[in-house]
Structure formats: structure tokens, C-alpha cells
Length: 189
Image (cartoon, rainbow, N blue to C red):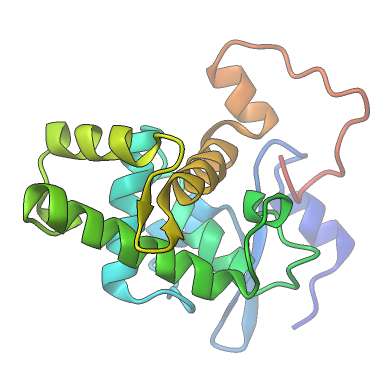
């Protein structure tokens, strides 16, 4: 099913929400990442444990990120051309494919949690997660040869984009959205 420009703009709520095209059973649904999460749209590029770890970390970094669909946003973007994706990783010295890098980052975060607290990420309490995330974000934090601090920076930035990177997100912050040039309606909010 081809999505028309009119459908795309209408689904984008007039440019107030980040709307992405999700393929489901041969159809294309235009949904926000949060709607995709609420509808149980399948994650394609990350395993269930990876998705759970990603949501736990992102929620700790940016409250509201899990419900806003950060995992669906990242997973969706892992499936597009790296030059066209909206992941912040493309602006840093992150090797492609980004899927492998995110998977390595999540595995490194799991090893970091296990080494520091002897638990899996999903088993950590809120205070333990805050402690762990704080340590992950320190410049130069590595697990083996993997730069965990860069992974932290990218995941946090992606979570901020999903929660606050739209005109609606700016409204929640009570900050006027004052883009020099308004972004195209529907794709970014």
C-alpha cells in the first residue's frame, strides 16, 4: 500500500508529532513511535532482551522515553538508509551498520551492569539504574574496546528527540518552538 502525501500529513497531526511509516501485514500504518509501541508493532532489528534493556536505559536517561516509543523509533531508524536516518549516531564516529553498533552498545551496557552490580539491566532498581547511567555517561567509559560513553550520548540524544524533539515536546516544556524554517509537516513534528 502506497502512502499518499495527504495521508502522511494528516497522520502527522499537522506537524505536531513524529510520525513514521510502519509496515504491518502488508499494510503501511503511519504512527508515532508511542502509538507503534502501544499497538504492539513488532520490533524488527533488536531482540526482546535488547529492546527491554534499551527502554530501561532510555527511560532512566529521559523519563517518558519508553512510553514515547524510543525503542520503536530507534528500531525503525535502523531499517532506513544510514544517510537518511534520524539517529544522532550518524553525526559521530559510529561504524555502520548502526544495528550492529546499537546491539554492541546494549551488550556492553549489560556487561557494565553485571560487572558493577552483578545484575542484569532489567533487574536493577531505579536508584541502581541512575547510578549505572551516571557512570556510563562519564567521558571515556569503556567496556572492552567499546566506548560506552558515546553509546550513552547517542541513546540519550535519541530519547530526547522522541520525547521533546517536536513542537508538542516544546509545548510540554513550555518553550516556544521557534524554528528558523519550519520542518516539513508530518515527519518530525
